[in-house]
Image (cartoon, rainbow, N blue to C red; front, side):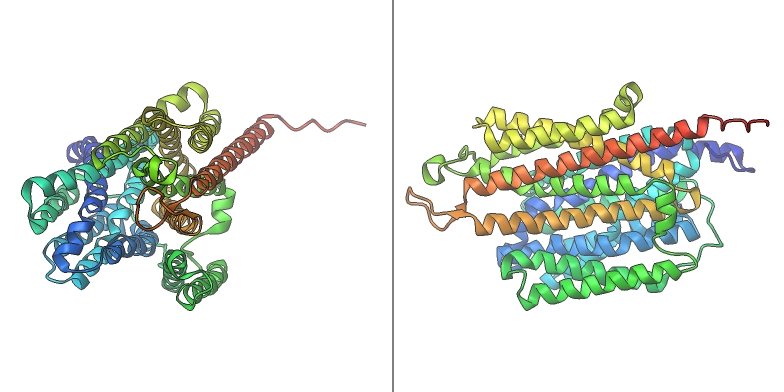
Length: 489
């Protein structure tokens, strides 16, 4: 229900009217910041004189920081107020962005990436604010926000490179999104109404520490496995430490008075299925970022597949994919209103699966390949637009940010697993170029294995959506059917 607290009714109504526009703009710039740095990695390596492979640590450190900080910031938002923690997150993201832009050494750039990690907390905190202040329209609003976020990532991936070509100064180019975030600090602090903090909710610091150790261990080990081998000490030890910390975390959460992740409460609120679907879809979405680029740029004369596209052509195809992802998110609410949530989730997952199979088995011109990516983007975008609405609808108002934080973290872990899987397959299944090419390239069988695997994962997500929707419908029928009257003897 939309809330209207007593006192300062005029100021509050103005704040409520400004809430959604501010959150939409903030999520756009959140996406812009996350996408902006991707085309600048090569220039970062040149300016700081580090190997190109080492620049991937900028993304890896940011991902690790997000995975660790988002659950903690979310639960602190439930405890102390979602607007307050959103302001804190914007301050940290802006400070990290400035450090990335102006840091005199690569080590400080990595430190900036770590400080910038709370940029991923914007979405769960925004979802909690919508749950509090715009309960009736939260599902629609969150679809708009997710669509804007994905559009921001796509725009950043393009505009970062364009700005670099136009300005030519790395530090100035990186300051552009940083300045935008600085502007949002007072805008969020003044223009966003605060939610009601839950003073009875304590912060599970032990659980947060164990979860942080588990996520860092698992994600670091999995990211290193494709390069050094899963059974190498560098990868295996962090993974084992992560698993041990995760087991300890689950044990602690069972006894915590105010757990970071209340598993029984999530189960009773039927939140397991959207979490699982979000995890599965994140695997396919994040995992399919690099394979299309590798496929499109490959030369058929050298490796027997590919489209020999230059960077501009690849950028256009990827932009089409990103645009359809955004479109799917934006129309998700209207589709669910027209056809029902379960049907749309199942159909969208199956559409993405069909597109993945088409990429794997139908010889594709550039136009056809772009079509498959577009269909996959629409399906994935619809799912990404629908799931956050389910999460905030089924979560309690006092723990909305915490639940949304868990949802985001599950997606982050899914993306990390996907990256490790793709890197391993493209490293193991290779072919030697024939036409005077240097080095080795992934074989076509590697792409087929990746896309078939992702298709199966999407089919599994459709099955989970269909099964959970059927169970939900059965539960509603059971609640509406009156119990039979006792027979009189």
